[in-house]
Image 1 (cartoon, rainbow, N blue to C red):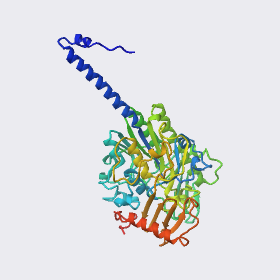
Image 2 (image 1 turned 90 degrees about the vertical axis):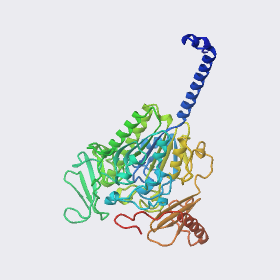
Image 3 (image 1 turned 45 degrees about the horizontal axis):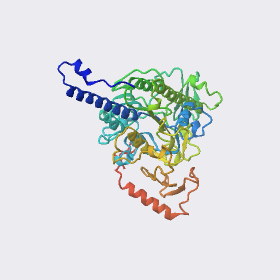
Image 4 (image 1 turned 135 degrees about the vertical axis):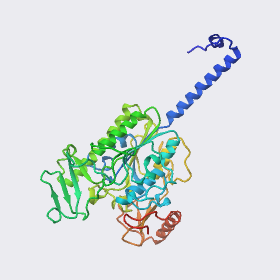
Length: 500
């Protein structure tokens, strides 16, 4: 036991100091020490937050979601060490609106972010996450966190919308919807590109003599000029990045973790993988000789590359002694575009751009050692909106009333069996969907009437029950209409069109 120092020790060190004042100074010092310890304890309870977002990754690809063709050991390990949601939703079936929902915790249609800006529309004035919307990074920075975005932004390509004006202290990445992974001439990679016609003017598939470039006409479109007016930026300055972007983003994420290991931080690592253009490093392609179709093999290589990047980030947290103090979240921004990438959503129906389950139900993982259960498969359904609320709650701040999500931690630590969400709303032009409990209504783009599905019995949405249960359709439609009345008109229309 440490002996108490008598007051006269301090009095003797400072001549002329009386015993009463000396005693009060010692009491003040003790109180200050206690307050510092309390502050340190509170600080220890605030986790670092690492939010990893994959791009266009389908529901059925990861090993922890039943995928068997492409090993994903690092993401599977994250699932084994945390919570794996079997029914995690995003707010839109494509990139930008989904990210707008995630970074605000609000339905993006509340503020008119309904359509996906692509190409030159990304640089149009006023296109982006509205400036009066506070971001997750804004709120965490105000709570004392260091903040960084590494990777894809796609929430505004003009200066007012720059990530460093939206709550991020640091930014490394690009502003628009996609980017080639390596600069031309794409050495050491095999590149798969969409084209309207082959070099001979025909249709089908063509491969260059060296095998490194493949053209395919199967979608009837040409690969967008992703790099046009879309440099890789460090902050706001263009940089000449030579590494594959998956490696470059991993490198920058790990560097940020090392720089800020002495303070709470929020890292949003928004990989562009596995989004097109499809470019696979030859070393990763060599892992999959058993996959005959080169289209699928390129995708497999890109996913394995992404998984290794996540593994490096998790290893860096452990090396820095931060694994136990970090809340790690992983999700895809939308379902896989199967025809474009081969990214599979099985056993779900549909793909990116659609409001079937395959367009909006995504892989979703949470890991916080000691706070969240380990190896828990969570069958209750939740939303990316709830992830936003969970991150803010974990950081210790009050939850804003404007959020459309709720903190999941009280229901997961330990699991309490109560529903995590009771309803969810979607709208994309003529497409619409609404879920309440196990029931979901969908209004597909090609049809004007609502369809009805019991997702508990039929997650693949194979049996439309609307004709058999019209009263339920009417009830769910009324609930959708009530929410829809709260939403804003779209601020812009689909790319190349004015708002409807």
